[in-house]
Length: 619
Image (cartoon, rainbow, N blue to C red; front, side, top):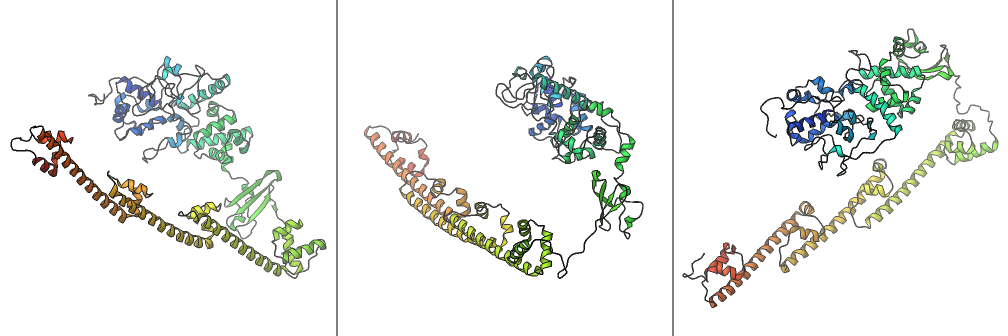
């Protein structure tokens, strides 16, 4: 039925089975109406689809753009068609995306963690009721509860992975070999797996039901935000921290926060969250969030403590505002730390409102007296290492001091400036040593790579040095040197290669004089060790020379061939005259063993005319 039908509706329009999926229903519809090629029907249902590859949109079991002509051809309403998809599930968790905004938007962007792009079936269910279930299309569903077996996703005959829909797809058949899906081999599942899957599939049927809802319908609230509020209230009622729930659900803290704040996350994350809380989706739907909890969440924490201690700051006066941000809350110490974004003051308050401050000691200045409490041996070692220019961190680690103590002792001993100069000189010397060592390493690497007589790139040098590709952007002083060395080497390699190619091609062209068969350009380039593309792009003069030589060689072979044919014609005509046979073109060509069409050549025709007399007309 590749031709269009007379009426707008299909001849056979069966009602969908309860729980049937959209792709399975369309395949069943095509089979009942005699479509041998699935695309013949789908192309009519969706006139805007211009390629059979777009059939793969059906594998996501999601409402398609305006449903095309499906309502017209089947008589089904959009609400009835929606029950064949996972749209009721998606609408419970988020505002359905507008797939019409972009031609590149696909349902797979938000359904890849929920809908399986591979088809899985239960052969026993297909034998009793031959239709594809929507529950089978869900990624977490792996077994058939009714028959206790695993769902099959491969053909037993050819081993191909089953697909939901394709261009030449046939209903309940393997898209490759055409084997009946009702005859697939099955394997039974254990009782533990069945128990887990039974609970999951009951929950999934609840989520796929358009008549059920998880949250109250509020016009100005996103379903994901209302659902996140329920999750947050449920966690607070159980008394678990976000970290504990994240560990149970195998989620990150960031994903946990996104769920509770109503930020869009993969649908699979919601399933993990609720399984970790050990509560069903029906119980979550019945759960009511108290207004007190909502108000407590909307009120910033420790709002009464957010008074900036700076008297000149506007945030110093009541009422406190949110421009004073909470940096850290420490319940075990009953304190909180804040940051005033107006005057940039950071402060700490206790829960009772008291301001916690630490006394600050004035900085020690050079020349001021200081009591040296450390042993004299350690002080002597400190002086020696400082004068040698060793860094403060290394000195502190060697003496078991703190870096701040080391700096204080420099000042107290009056050698701070001397130590700084020694440290600066040591850093300069170490930098020069590293530079020289690096230069030697680079030079050795370049010499080794240049000895191979091949072109070298900057990336190859960085890999040989054990560095990444960004190394030369950091080591700027060495980059110019390496660039110039590589350029000169590559120029020399290129010149030698061009000379070799030219010599080899010249030798091949000389050999054409002795060749008795037709030679192609590719044969000559292969002998020279290059491809035809390289010859065309890099050696245009040689390419022209090769074409001229080959053309001359072919002309010479053609002339030699004609001379041989003329000799054959003369010998054949001489034999025929000796046999007193009547001569004509065809008789002479047959006797000479030449093609009947050889007389199309003017030279051959002239040779034949010399032998054919007026009493032997040409055939």
